[in-house]
Amino acid sequence: MLEYVYQATGLLLIVFAVQTFLDKGNKKRLGTGAFWLIYGLSFLFGPMLPDWFVGVMVLVMTMIAACGLMGSGSYGYSDEKFRIASAKKLKNSMFIPAIIIPVVTVLWSKMTDSSALIGLGISAVLALVVAIIITKGTVQQSVHEGRRLIDTIGWAAILSQFLAALGYLFGEAGVGETVSQIVKEIIPNNNLFAYVMCYTFGMALFTIIMGNAFAAFAVITTGVAIPLLIIEQSGNPMIIGVIGMLSGYCGTLMTPMAANFNIVPAALLALKNKNQIIFLQLIPGLLMLTINTFLIYFLAF
Image (tube, rainbow, N blue to C red; front, side):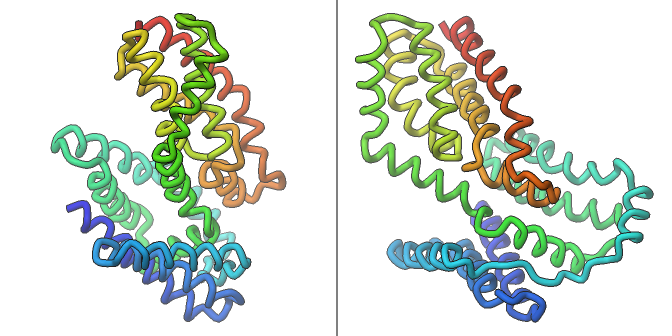
């Protein structure tokens, strides 16, 4: 069933690509359309394509983005007065579709014991239906708006996938083992708090560098949490893993590398300083990171 979610995503991206090719208001429509077309084909036919061909597709997408061949076009905007009037009329009801997505995803995962990604796909469709009912809009309008948003995000829409893959490669290359050796040489034996602090702050630091907590988790958990906290100190792996991932998310709050979390919202909100969101999140992120360190230390051992 998960494959159907990927195929639906691929079809939507291909629709975006076709719309972009036909959009004469986009001076870079060929590059933008090609990018979303290749991305959509990878979702739609991924299992059928040889690995080397998918790699070539990724390289072509990278070339398109690196050469600055992507841009925004025309999306049939409604006038500003209409948007303001609609916002005043709908008010907080527009939060309902946004709430449906996480709630239905979690319920699906708990009730069916299957992949949360399937629940995410189902909840997204359900949220779309509810949004159309609330706004009295059309499917066509939602597609145009979807294209506008993904064009605004641009190449950063696939950044999380790239970084997660990079984290896997780092794990396969033995970076985690190298990190473990460095930690053992620096920190005195059996200094539990130092081990915990190294793990939580290491998760955050590596996430800041990589821009993705999943990439950091593959490396830092393998190098620090498993050998030093779980095996050597007999820590609770569930508590360590969950709070460790949360520590990585603290790093996500502090880095422009997490473009889809920090830079894209700044662009969507048209903020003058693209790093303003990071500045606002810095202190809460450090505070959460400190709390996570003490939570692991007192709860996992």
